[in-house]
Image (cartoon, rainbow, N blue to C red; front, side, top):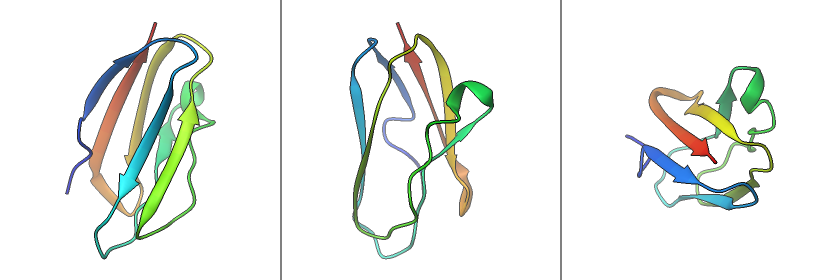
Length: 75
């Protein structure tokens, strides 16, 4: 399992939407202080969005599947 794309570059004010359609639960959780606002509920199907308002590098993972990791650069 993995996030696709695993690396993303966006602009301040852009919204990223994570979509899940498989049969196992997932969550999107930020790693580190900069990514504290990235914290979705646990769900198996559906989508969750987050708007990035501050430039920086944001790392995230699925705490239920720690091998699922990604990063977003906000410019």
